[in-house]
Length: 495
Image 1 (cartoon, rainbow, N blue to C red):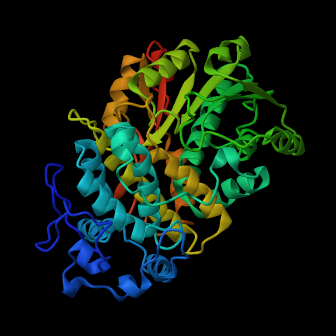
Image 2 (image 1 turned 180 degrees about the vertical axis):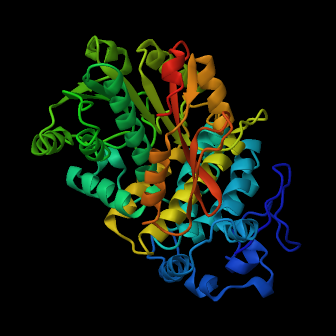
């Protein structure tokens, strides 16, 4: 289904017979093709009106098409360096959900209630939390937009708009069963590199930093501060790696400090259900490989200073916790980490592109929507189109990125250049990954869908981060940082 995305000042979709100022509630429903102004030559059997899923329905038409798409991605992997522009254009043309959601967000921001009403009606007919990625994106977007409307136009005006029901049937992380929560994390890391490849890069850098420090001086305790979203799944690989460092460099003990929430409400993937605790499993595993491990829970960042021990090798792993925070929150967190004076900091964040000077609620929504599309599209390929419990849990949590919250304000995540400026302002200098870390990540990526691509660091000092892409589009980057006053000898060593 195709619809033209028009500027926010436009009042009608590009279709001569469609008047958005007419009340849709009193008119008979049109077919999907008529509503979206789709040319007949682009009509797809999988999206005919007889197969169109409804909110709360099974979305069988979408599920059937999703299986075909997923198998196509698996059977014909994207070859790196060939046809990326064509593939990206084709991918964008097929993303009809964004071409409805973004104009609806613009109409809400402009207070255009007739246009908002019509687009909400169309989205309500197409949205489904099951089925192919477009239908699921429409469902998550519709849910977010119905919550944005009262904040944008006021309760009284919002009450005049008939909003379709669109409640996600799957709970988010904070409300899911702890056993399903852990199973979802493990399964997602097995089938998708979204978190596993950045985790592998971080673990390789941490192990290399620990062994390098141990080769220069007597081996010291390694203290890792976890400000991330792995919920313990990341660390068994690191613990094993620390037992395989060159003889004489093995740390005598390892401490893991897990930091609590850095923002309220929590950023996506950072919360965990009540009763979940990864410590027993990690401690048992460390004992099985004869490694002395201690785990500390820090309720907030302000308590981190009390967990430090003189003479230890301190490494901070800051992953996916800053991208959806405000500029003030980001600056405060980075200052806190800088005050700890770590040997190394690993920063992994979503790659949302360059910052925008013309910020608006609609542009923020569009940027988050695009990243959510990449998550849903890649997750559908990872699970081969199957509607598994684990994928539903992960997607429900990912959808919270669209939720309107007064505390977030402008979308300031941006791309690598924006982050480089923030880290420099906080007193950090970028360091380079070692060749072994990059090769480990490349080898790991080969087990996943062919649509994924690793972007290694270039020889330029301004491009030391490692990027991850899905179908040629940026998803995230992983980078290394050290305090700016670190010794030249230490800064010269690639982690």
